[in-house]
Length: 518
Image 1: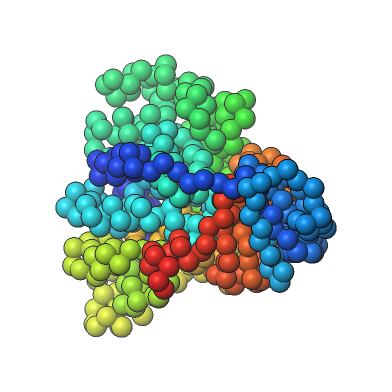
Image 2 (image 1 turned 45 degrees about the vertical axis):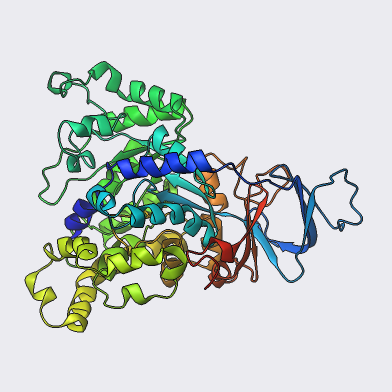
C-alpha cells in the first residue's frame, strides 16, 4: 500500500497541458494589474513574529512600495510622511503576522484532472486554474515553493492576476528513476531538463541526452541560470522495488555542487532506508514524513531503527517536512461526505465540485481502489469508508508518531503540504494547508511551533529570510491581519481579516471561490 501511494503520487509530476498555456495567454492579454497604494499604515495592532518571544503590542506598521518601512508606537497622525496615496487600517484588537509559506506544492496542474480531462472540459479547468492561486491566499499562503518546476511554468503562474509569490526547485531524477518513470519515453527526458546521468552510466544515456550536460555540476549550473531557488532529488524504489535509485556518491556530488551555488537540497524520502540515505548524503531538507518503516512493517510504535534515524535528524539539524495530508488525501477519496465540506466552496469553483461528483470525476478514486485489498471495498459506502480508514490508519499513525517525537525534541520542522500529492481533489489548494495545520496539532505540535514552521523556519531553510518570514523593517509586506493570536491557536488562520500581498490589501471574502457571496 505504501508503495502504491508513491506510485499514485508520481503520476502527474511531469504533466504539462496545452489548456494551461491557453489560459495563461488569455490572462496575459487581458490583465493589466492593480494599482498599489504607495503607503499603507496599520495602526494600534499587535504584531506577532517568530524571531520575538513576545508580541509587539499597540504598534503602527508602515508599508511603502511593498515593504515594511517602520514599526513604531506612533499613529499615522503623528508620523511624518510625504506620502499622498495612503491607506490606513485600524488594527485595534487584531493581530498582524507574516504571510504563511508552504514549502512543498505543485502548482502546474488542475487538481483531480488529467490533460485529457482538461481538454474535454476547458471551462471547468479554466475556472479551477483561475481560482487556485486565490485559494492559497484565502488561507493566508502568500509564498509557495514549487518543488518540481521549470521557468516556463513559473512564468505562467506569475501572469495570473492575484497569486502568492512563488519560487521553484529544479527536479534532478536519475535516468528512468522516480518520478520520471510516469512519463512515456522518450518524452520523459524532455520533461525533466535537470535529469542526472550517473558517473559510469554515460554509455547508456538515452538518445539525445549528452551525459556531459547532465552531471551534477552541469545541471546545477543550468538550474541556477534558470532562476531556481532550490534543488529536489529523489530516493524511491517503487512498489516492486525495481526502480533505479541514485548512488550515494551521486547525491553527495549534487549536494556539493548545489551548496557551491548556494542552493539548498531537498529529497523525496518516505522510508527509513531513504531517510538514512538522505542523512548520509548531507541534504538540507527531507521533503516528506516517515511513513514507510523499512524492516518494521507491522507496527506504528517507534522502533529502535526509526528512533536512531530521528535522533540523527535532530542532531544534524536537517530540516523535515511532515506532509501529513498526503495519506489523508488518499484515504479521504473514499469518504462519502468529502465533497460536502462547506469549506470546499471557498477554494474550488462550483463547477469543479460538481464534476468531482460524476463517475468521470471519480476516475482517480477508482484507480486507487484497484490497489486496495478486495475486502476493503465490500459492502455499502459507509462500510467501505470504515474499512478504508482502518487500512490507512497504520501509515497515518506512523507519521504522527515520528512527527510528535521530532516536535518534542525541537527538530527543524518545516511546513509543507505536498499539494496536490497526486491528482486528488482531496488535497485542495489552501484548504489542504489548513488541514495540515490541524494534523500537526493533533500530532503534538503547539500552535507556536506550527507558526514558526510556516513562517521563519521555512524562510530560513530556503534562504529567503532576508525577504519574508517575519514582521520586520525592510521585509516584503506579505502579511496577515488576524482576529486571534496564531501562536496560541491555529484557529486564527481560519479567521483572517485581510491578506496583504506585497503591500496590497486583499479582503479575504473577495478571494473565495464564491466571489464573496458565501
